[in-house]
Length: 279
View 1: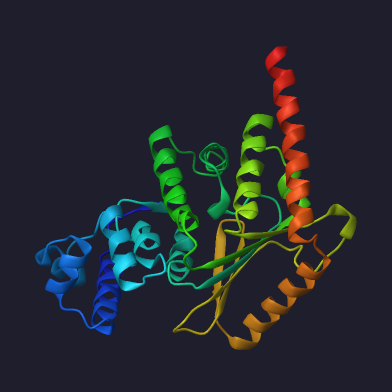
View 2: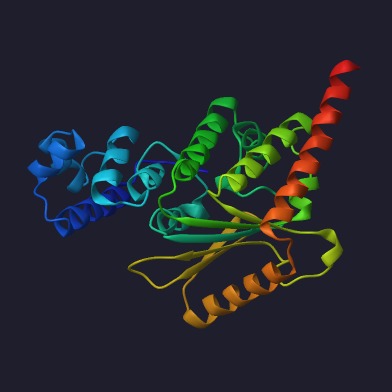
């Protein structure tokens, strides 16, 4: 993990703010009045000298139709921890209008509860103290704020059944985590599909894959392995990744049946947690 001030990211953030402001036909003064921010603060953000806080970023998204960009891009600016190989993918994630992800073993970061994320991020090397782990967890939860509204991006998650069955943090943590995914799916904020064990071998069994689409960029893919990740931009490679995703999705349970399975497994974990508490 890396903690650092990121001048280049601030410059990119500021350039995007300026681009969207001008596209909306607004001066800095007009935007400052709408977003309840000072014109000077907006000027500093556009110049890459300052970063907005979360409330500022939300208002910028609201006034400029940022589709969550200004909130989601905050972790790259300063004082946040992200894996070195994930930095570029995080920038793309903040601009995406559609995201489709496949997870083989663990709940994807965007869907993780605090307790689940704390357990996952406590593994790995080098080991971290509690304060460092808390910062990583905070970054992950801040990314998940994109789930707070029905604005972009559209989100679809394809989960191997192993994601549901791998016990991370104990049955109580797992019950809460699966309920969280189930509630997001039931509220129509996300679509979720589970690839059951009965499918056997499938097109995406190799590892984590994220597909992203944009209004102003060609689609990309992001593939992740052990302490590594790659942005894939070559159109033929991206199309292959999309085809593999579609093939695996064709083998998965429907959204409704996936929610039923999530509920059933969550209930099993909750019953197990209750039995443990009574011992």
